[in-house]
Length: 242
Image (tube, rainbow, N blue to C red; front, side):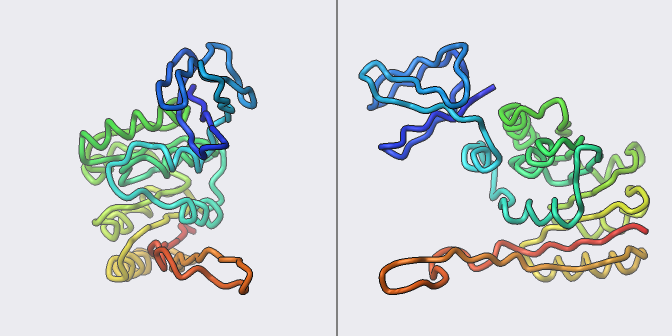
């Protein structure tokens, strides 16, 4: 499994597997086969690199991307509001880069995720392998709506697709008792449609959150929220089968 090799002085980091070789302006770094987290490996010119175990934010930063991935702050809300744990079975529609599926797999859940684009799905499989959760995350190519009749019931259904409202209509037949559906949308219109669909099919505890977070700036003049960056990442709607 890959490790993160960090050069503190230059604020650089590289994903490397045991036995790999990195060639850069900091020298040639040959990664030992038995290297572990916390160990320091020097390049041939003596530049030190510290090995670190990969964590979720590292994967978010280093996954190969096929589009805009779901932000960690949104993933945290999904985990917190649905209570996802290692005993859960998850259906995820709209794999994309695979960030959400990887996070949920690292929580110990079993994830079946669907991606329509074959090239995107292949990239997601490589990312899932990098995350070390290929045994818990099954990346399938195709439209999930074409395979609903072959699917079991799940503890949580996560949706990040344009046709999410249509999928919400089908979730009563996909969720176990007490299970949740979580819908991510970058637009208010899609969010409104998902909420309406949830009410129409009798789902309970329907709520929507705009996922605003702002970083804080601290300097000699004072402290205030940062004026840079995106003001919001999107909207999350949650509903429950009771």
